[in-house]
Structure formats: C-alpha cells, structure tokens
Length: 219
Image (cartoon, rainbow, N blue to C red; front, side):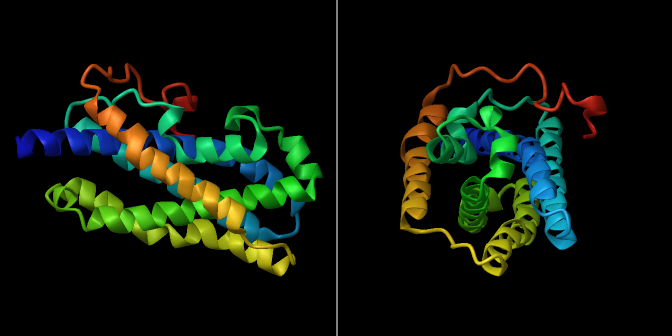
C-alpha cells in the first residue's frame, strides 16, 4: 500500500513540477521583453532575468530526464495546478497568455505588480522545495532528491533581483493583499487541486513533451 502511494505521489509531484517549470520559462520570455524595454540600461537586472529563464528551462529538462528514465510521460496536468497561472489571473484579470506586454511596459503600476507576483511565486517555490527535501518519500528517490537540491540552490537568484529592483527604484515591496492572494492560492493547490489529481486514477498522460513545439526543443 505504501509503495503504491509513494509511486503515485512522486508521479503527481513530478508531473506538476514539469508543467510549472515549462510554464515558468516560457512566461519569462514575455517578462524579459518587458524588462528590456523598461530598463534598457540595467544590464544586471536583465542578466538576472535571463538567468532565471535559463534556470527554469534547466529544471524543466531535469524533470523531463526523470520521466524518461522511468519510461513514462507526465500526467496531463494543466493550468489548474499552476501557482503563477492563478496569481497572474487574479492580479491582472487575465491568463498569462493574454497578458499585454506593451501595456505592462507602459504602466509603472502593472510592471511593479508583475515584479511582486514573480517575487512571491519564487519565494513560495523556495519554501515548498525545503519541505519536499525533508519528505521521506522524496528522500527515497535519489534522482528526484538531486533535482530538488539543484532547485533549492537556484531559487534565491530567482526572486532577489525583483526585490532588489523594487527597492532601488523606490517601489513598494509585496503588501498584505498580495501575500494573502499567494497564501490563498497555495492552500487551494495543496488542499484541493493536488489531491484531486492524486485521486484521479483515470487522468491521462501527456502524448507529447511540453516543449515539443519549440524550435528543436532547445529554446
């Protein structure tokens, strides 16, 4: 019984992570466009966001290799399991794919909000990785444990640049409302959406990798 539970747990966990890592680096392409347009002279900030994007792509590939080693495709989870998907839709009133990059570049308020949302999402991810690395199930999975160790090492560089830009630009840090939205999304994912995936034994697996449509799978 415990073995079956563990296998299902890591299957669901890795499927959700591969979705979010892919969503992360593809969404950061739009963030990079906004940062380059808003802060063309801030080479350190631009480089930090470029690194963030590259790390998310690296993490995605690690999970892809994890599934390949198990000769499985990920479960076909979607945006209902994406923290950043829900956060963006609540704060901007539209899905990530419908964000207007030009409007974000033109608006101080929208650009600052985007920075705060990314900052809080990455901080949430860092906390979650620490919890997972203490999990007995994850500790029994050497490949998965190593992936989370790499993510833990990379995470601080993913939220600090946004915090630092807000600070040196005289913009406010995340407030109580944004933190409350982050907490609400996290609890909803943990208590409702993730258990629903775990218990849905009929959930199909993906037929293709999330990056299948990207140029040579190397972008």
